[in-house]
Amino acid sequence: MSVENEKIKEFEEDNYSTFSDEDLINKVAIKNELAFEELFSRYALKIKSMMFRLGVGESGAEEISQEVMILLWRKAGLYDADKASVSSWIYTIARNYRIDKLRKIPISELDINDPTYVGDPQPTGMQILLEKEQRKIIQLAVERLSIQNKQILVASFFQGLSHSEIAKKFNLPIGTIKSKLRLSYQSLRGKLGKGGIEDLSQ
Image (cartoon, rainbow, N blue to C red; front, side):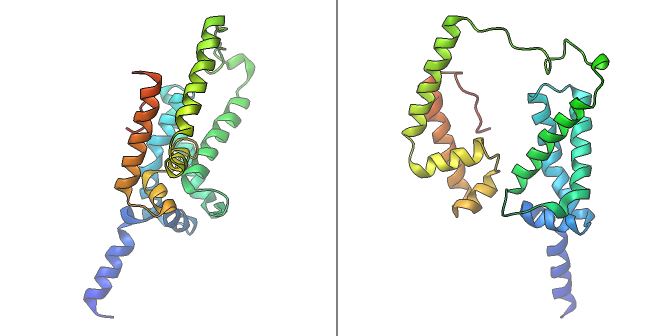
């Protein structure tokens, strides 16, 4: 192999930003630090944001994010591509880690004002009716989507796949995936009215 080809091969091996999540996790399994750095850059903030949505405070979310990434470094070899996508596997680990962490906190140390532990107020009869009606509207809107658009929406919203993972799964350009998701979200928001559904396309 020529020196030039060796340099090209070396660059390709080190340019982990082009690697798929699955390729990265396989590299991390053999303790490749550069691959781990790339995986960390892709998921650390996402895990932290997920913890925020689950009611975890700033410091707790940051701590869990860091500890989950350390777990990934140690346990990457356990990943099974036949059972889940990398993103789904990582988010499952994060959710389970949060639950385990809460279970280990002594009752005396729990903050009763923490939104994680404070139950939602009982909905009024009108709120219950409105929620049921909203669920029916969403269900009808989803049913009216094409089969492929519905599958892509499920992959993004419920399975937590990234746009690139969805593009790979359906063998479509990533621009097409973004366009289909945008149209699906617009259709759902249109049925619910402005502000009626979170803009997940961002």
